[in-house]
Amino acid sequence: MKTVLVTGGAGYIGSFTVKELLDQDYKVVVLDSLENGHLEAVDTRASLEVVDIADKEKVRAVFNKYTIDAVIDFAAYLAVGESMEQPVKYMKNNVENFVGLLDVMREHGCRYIIKSSTASTYGNPPEDKYFPLKESYHEIYHPSQSALLSGKWDNEGFAGEEFFQKVVGYYNEFVSDRPELSLTDADLAMLRVPASIYGLTKMFDEIILDKYDQLYGVASISLRYFNVCGAALNGEIGEDKPNPTTLMTVTFWHILGRIPELQVFGNDYPTKDGTGVRDYIHPLDLATGHIAALRYLEKTRKSEVFNLGTGDGYSVLDVIYAVEKACGKTVKYSIKPRQSGDPAVSYADPSKAKMLLGWRARYDLADMANTAWKWHSNHPRGYIKNTANKAV
Ligand SMILES: NC(=O)c1ccc[n+]([C@@H]2O[C@H](COP(=O)([O-])OP(=O)(O)OC[C@H]3O[C@@H](n4cnc5c(N)ncnc54)[C@H](O)[C@@H]3O)[C@@H](O)[C@H]2O)c1
Image 1 (spheres, rainbow, N blue to C red):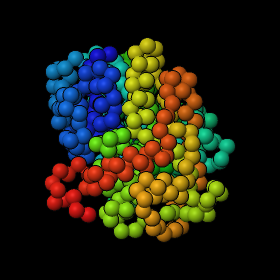
Image 2 (cartoon, rainbow, N blue to C red):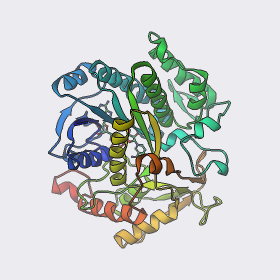
Image 3 (tube, rainbow, N blue to C red):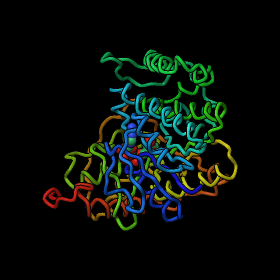
């Protein structure tokens, strides 16, 4: 595969993968609306097309302009809290626009796609026996009711199965003239697992990809990333979101005075220090994971799902200590009660990616914190170049 279209390539994780692809001699076309991406994050060796995937004609024009051999699709909305308040916004961008992209690919004979998925598709596993999480989790755990936490639909509050049925009704209407995309009982069982609308939209995407393989021969790899943090080794690209939610980024923002208070939710979990334990992964490791997935797909044409995580669990306090060590400052935080639905521990079993892709994470928590500090301390206001804005 020579030319790869990277949607969302101006965003955080996409920009790292674009660089790695270029370093590995792929030609790269970045397609991004720049709604949440940054021009400065796009490697100048790549071609950039500023297009919203919602505009199918413009996406078609990109496929007419270049011969695209494969797509790596990062474009999505990903704020869990916002997804619970604005589910339709998430269904439109993460599911409907995604189907539109697949259709344009199909029209142009492009039959390979690597898709960003997420650990949020695992929801909140009810028992410790499910950890470390394996890709086959949805085959062994089938809740009878949806795990969706509370949110809003048409400004009215909903949770669980009632909320779920609203979302499924919306999808059914969207595919009403395409019975081949309707949901089976097995699909619905998988869709009941995620606890957030964001996770649910990504589960929809994985299911849709499975259907596109069976119906149209589009081979795909969905990569379920765990919590992503860290920046380029030289600190030149990193995470710049208006309202970050990742613990490490929030902690650095607190250090830089951009967030007044740092809150730790729960210090009474059955973990080594009482705080929640999660799996963290560096975007440089994700970049090599995407290229390994692309090569696997080219070789086997076999659709798969892989976890991309380190397989190591780090507690909230581990992350705070790593940040303190990286920047040489003390982090002040307050302890708040646990947040509903947050599991004590969540970490990946990355052995499938190791076995089939020959991939493993190289960077640990200290690397993530050291590189992130390099990025944040050099760009305290993110990609904004204006030095007046750099004062914090
Ligand atoms: N950051 C994480 O911790 C994390 C964890 C798991 C999965 N993911 C997934 O990885 C992907 C990338 O995440 P990120 O952190 O880089 O996010 P990001 O917001 O930095 O990047 C997403 C990019 O997609 C673009 N985009 C969104 N909708 C678009 C549309 N309709 N048309 C064109 N461009 C559009 C945005 O402008 C942005 O540049 C997402 O799909 C996300 O769900 C991220």
